[in-house]
Length: 329
Image 1 (cartoon, rainbow, N blue to C red):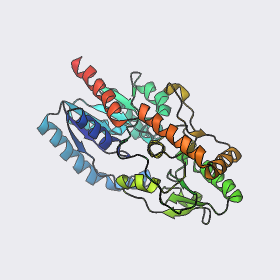
Image 2 (cartoon, rainbow, N blue to C red):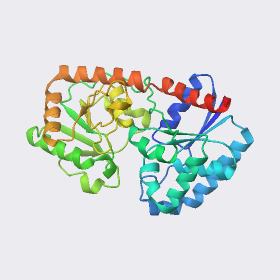
Image 3 (cartoon, helix red, strand yellow):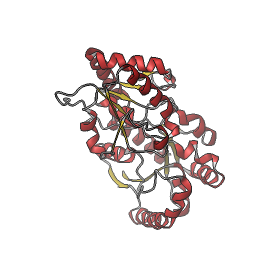
Image 4 (cartoon, helix red, strand yellow):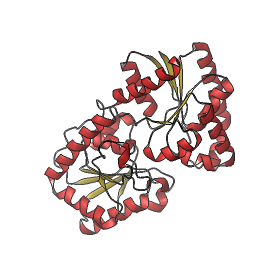
């Protein structure tokens, strides 16, 4: 099949493209610009003229090439297919449903985009209830992880215990829980280094000076090497999901502390240390920091679980099956 994926979200599109190419398809990625994606929604309106021009160019490309499959990422992007009058698959990722459906204009546009799609995909289990209210036939497609890129690496020698707080500072990620756990842990273990990325609209509220070191973001392909420097990863606590960042950390053999609330989605729950209790979270961190064997066993279980449930080629096969079911009908 000749396939095009439009818009990049957290490297999901690029990873699916790579997986589909492995299956013998001819796949093109149109990532589109993401500048401004971390700014408040009202300010993004200033970027609309540039984005409209780019959307017109992408639609022209789609019409010229006559792809068998057009796969759009981010719910309201379905408007491109509506305006361009071509069939499309629509892939939802998070705030495009949780937040945008609450907005009058974006909500209307999103519902139209979902309703006109050949098939709707959602990427995390918390989105099921939202997506299926609009499209009952929405399908869960696990986020794909490139296990060749994200793999265990030998850690640097001579470094003491280090913890990485991996989620960005946004309220939807539950930073108040992550920071509270880190604060309690640091009260007990003040010498352990804790790092976090310098990103997120709520950074000034939750990135407490002296509690953690802020560092710049690294390129996607640099993440495995960065993860190799840490002993434990602290994820998100509000949505009850294992997001891309946590999955990539698990694929690199790192134990992850977060909160998971959807055990029915998998035939086996993810082997994360799931909690929302501050003292329990600090206890787990203390044990992991001091117990190398515990870290190793947790890391191996996490890697094996991601291999079974999120391998990018296997996820690409699920997507391929969805394409074929629709095209053949």
